[in-house]
Image (tube, rainbow, N blue to C red; front, side):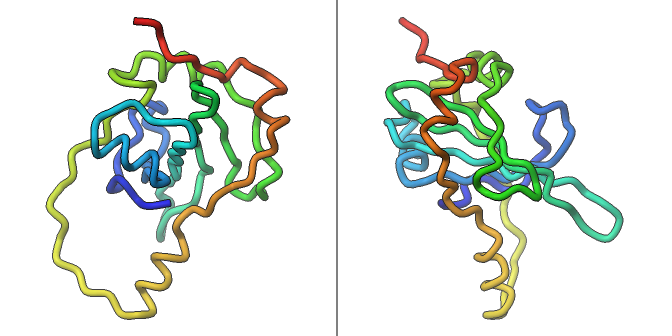
Length: 153
C-alpha cells in the first residue's frame, strides 16, 4: 500500500475526521491514469481525529474491486483483522454518486513543506502505513448491501 493523499478533512464522511488515503498498486495505477480500477484494486482511508496533544485513529474505511463490483468495509480503531463490519449500503449509495467508477477525487496536493527526517522518524512513518487486511470471503458474500456494480452506460 502506498499513500496517495495528504491529510484532508473527509467531507464525504460528515467532516467527522481527517483522512489519509492509501492504495495498492492497481488502485494507484487507476488514479494515475484516470481509468476505472481493475479487479484487485484496494483503497483504504485512515480516519484520524484530533485530540488535545495529538490525534487518535478513528478506524479505517476501505473499498476493494472484486468481480467487477466495489465491496466496502470498515475496521474499528482497536480491532484486529477479523473484526470487519459487514458492507454498508450507505457506502455504495454515496460512492455511486462519485464522478468516476465509485471513486471520489482526492483533494489537490499542496506543495510539501521542506522536511528532514532522521532514520528513526522515517521508520516510524513507514510503520504507521496500513497493512493489508485479510478479509474472509464470507464477509463479502454474507450481504450484498454494500456491493456496488458499475452503473450501465
